[in-house]
Image (cartoon, rainbow, N blue to C red; front, side, top):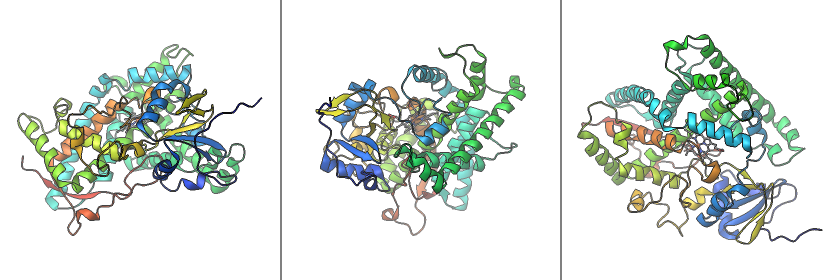
Length: 479
Ligand code: HEM
């Protein structure tokens, strides 16, 4: 017998495609508009797939905390399946005992404070090189592309920490590697018919060429991992520092690291995939948005630089600002929170899938429904934030709202069982990068460009990055 259930309100859709056509180029923005009309819990039909969008802190709390256990799985999607070696990873595998164990292992071994501290010397060495190169641009009064700069900085650090190499002297150079990662992220973010039309969508993906492109991307990355792992097996590791691959290969030798048995080569590659795809772009995107907002808001720029210079000027024996010193920079921390509020890297978080039925606001959410939290909409909601479009870090003064998943008004890293396992790693990367570049240089707009001319458009895709590169002129600071 069919049971009557009260479903969330839905915008009217079209036959076959449902509400897909209403998503537009920037779904988080279109969905924010729709939620103003249909409410904080909406049900859309995306192709064949029922999808719920929640758009307020109260409904986000219900999903991510109260009913987390009912909806903390991930949907099965073609791109994520391929890139995760058939769900051997953390980010895309469904909620089960395997995922729990793997996540615990990675949190203890890879995302822990000990590991973050151990990669700090790598970050410092890369920062030294970057400061020299920007100083060169400053003396020649040339532009610096900060979007590229932050990306390369992260690529260099992550590659050194994970693979122990900088690629100089290997078959790959940094640009080639960046292309591989970029292509894989494009594959994850591009529209795949098979994710919305089970059983038949693959035909469309086949004809559009997406299928072939996806296969190629996975094959290229796989070949790259194989090569890196071989290099590690051949090398006399006594001579060099331990990197992430060494650690994973050591775990591979241990019996039953996971309750299920041994960690295999494919597990290692799936974990590496998460680190590369989750770790490189996210912090670079946040740093770029932060600098764009600072250059648009000279008052805030001046204030944050004064804080850094007053604090560091006192006792800076080395050229690089340390993690300890960064912990005392409270205004910088507010600047980063404000950046995350306006520009969350994953504006709809990573999609979840409902495991068992639950109710929010009296509406029944059924198993297999796909679920998104619109953190972008929450960050700009005038009911929560005064003058939401203004960049005002002071709003976090005398207020405990933080980004660590306890405050549902601000969720750049998500919350609940699926929260980003590398929150601390991500935040320290952003703080370290910004603090150093703001300490050593003043930043100006190129000749003839006014503050109003800075584009703040978002690019479409899985992550919400700045569409136009940020080009600024550095001036060596006299402190
Ligand atoms: C500023 C930097 C970063 C931001 C803003 C960020 C944001 C996020 C978000 C929004 C999610 C999804 C949470 C959800 O579904 O509720 C996530 C998940 C994840 N992130 Fe991050 N992240 C950052 C840095 C990193 C880094 C550095 C790594 C790895 C080295 C990483 C690895 C992961 C992984 C593995 C997941 C999947 C967790 C799971 O599904 O259990 N992230 N991140």
